[in-house]
Amino acid sequence: MRRCLLWLGLLAMNHAALAVEPRVAGKGHAMQMHKPVDATAAEAAARARETTYQQSGAQVRLLAVLPYGAGVVEHWQLANGLQIVLAVDALVPVVAVQSWLCVGSADEIAGKTGLAHLFEHMMFKSTEARPAGTLDRVLEQMGGSANAATSLDYTFFQETVPSVHVPTVLDMEADRLVNLDLTAAAFRSELSVVRNERREVVDNDPDGQIDETMSELAWGAHPYGHPVIGTEKDLAGLSVADARQFYQTHYAAGRTLLVLVGGFDPNALLLEVIQHYGKLPQGPTPQRPTAAIPTGAAQRSLAIDAGAERLAMAWRLPPGDHADMAALDVLTEMLANGDSTRLARALLYDKPIASHASADLNDARLGSLLQIHVTLLPGQVAKEALARVDATIKALNGSQPMTESELLAAKNRLKMAHFSALTSVDGRAEQLGHFLAGYGSLQPLLRFSADVEAVTVADVQRVAQKYLVADRRVVVLGEMAPPKVAGKRRTGGSKG
Image (tube, rainbow, N blue to C red; front, side):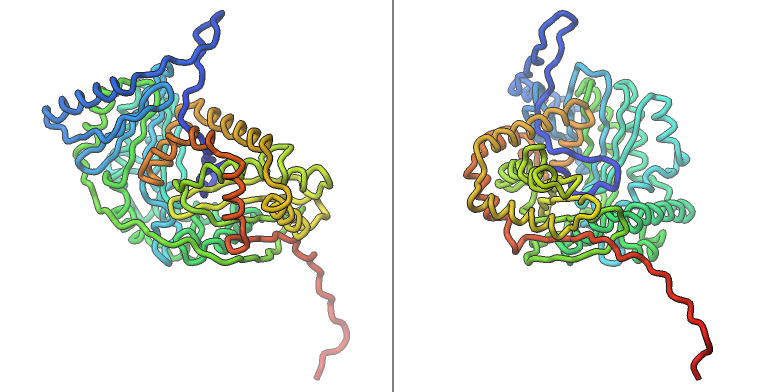
């Protein structure tokens, strides 16, 4: 199943589509679907509100009203470039407030890697009006929660609070977007935290080392080729001046997408957004990087300090909004994510050599990866796992094509993940933000269900034969490091 590339430890994103879970009418009643909103009437009402706002002097325009599960999603934009997504769920008393910045590690310049993720940390420091820790303390008093994550293409910050407290959260978010107090002391403190995080999750973690090596091999000099957390060399060389320049360039209303999902009055909430964000400057609009997807096979052996060997494989794929992605989603699900899937049988059950095998489609704006990760059983070797995976792919593309039963099972698992990811306001907001910040459009998300349903066995065979080829394949063999042998103490006289 598809998920977002990177997450520095915070939020994993299962690819899901738009639907609202069944609602229980009440004790003793049968479960019923929430009555769908009339999207045409909803758009007419939103257009009427737009006219009223503009007549009152508010510089806001309605970009779209789109069907969203049993309701709609309204997409607005202020004159300063801030985009607002509103998705009402009147049956929940909480709201997910998410700020998505269109800047990720791919937007960093050579020699200054790690700044995007560093600012995920810095944004919880003080502003000119609020001391460090204010956001966490206020959210705790509200009964809310906060989190953040950095990716290749964006950084986002989320709060989930009772509906009545949303205006306060908007005030704090708008404040830290433009008024962060970037002192040298705050910079040094968070840089130290990030460097320690790198040591923990990469330098001293065999899986982190493998993932970093995989990105380097797969992407090379491409904007996705350096680690999201940054290289140790670059982190060590960053200065507070670098941080201030990055903040002034990338943190602005014109690069921000505000997503609000939950129980609220869309008219009242949009007015709150206009009040808190409307007078913020648009800020710079730097050109986002573009690059062709690299080609060429690559393989590397990596000595790891672990209890068992590892195998990581990937195939380079098109960007996540490409027309082939639905078939690639089904292919990924069919390969490994179930007890009866082909790689599960080849690695875990028939003649077991592994304790874990998974496949993920990591989608991103400039290119995606279909990744396979295998953890071997103690004493088994990564090269044998590689041979079995290669044999499985060869059979799929030759003598043992996908069956209709495999297709159905893969689709059903995707649908289940699709609904499960949307059982919370946070999950719905993450999906909206991911597609709009990553691809500039909600359409790939809106059509996901229909696209998956339309996939045929022939579609899966076509994309397998097109993309699971040597020229797109990257392999990292995590092999056991040889045991350390203490040097013998030399005895006797010295030479000379």
